Length: 210
Image 1 (cartoon, rainbow, N blue to C red):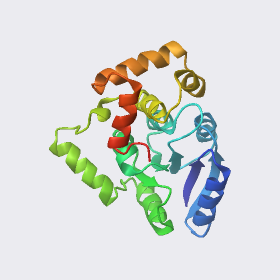
Image 2: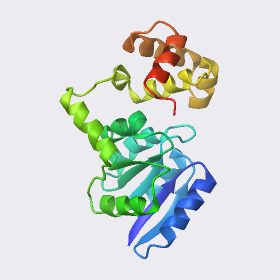
Image 3: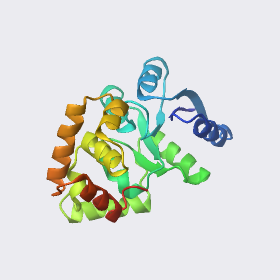
Image 4: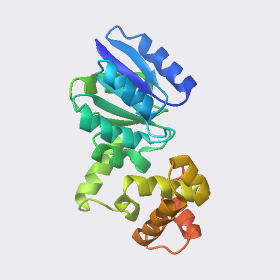
């Protein structure tokens, strides 16, 4: 039996995933979590083979949780499940230890196949992610400036590009305004930009806001 934990802050998503997996005789949803902290607490108590992990969790992000899981529970396979397309987060997630990256529009049969492969210790790489990996290798690792941002910088970059203020981001990520401003300056420097408006334009041009 493959034990799965679903980590997503939207109850309707968790319910839908449970319904999809409920028809499989060899897959059991053993727990649900609505935040990174909740997920790590569940992993302490429950034997799990695969975590379905949303990137956009409140507080500490899914990417942060992924790093913790790979450090503390390296035997657990993590499938990132996100509303963002592969071009936004897939390479970053794979680099940080995810066994696969799927969008929330993924067909049910593909999700089930991915869970079974990951539970067997394999990676599940879609053709779109494989293309990105090949491109990254060909270009020596990074082909876009935003791929040089740290995970925290990329998270703040996307929030700034989406129109969130520094104070709003500080509250959302439990950071000080000073820290967010420091990250903003680092982001501008790494992207060779001067203003937040240029940051927004960069995000639009690279289709990072979908």
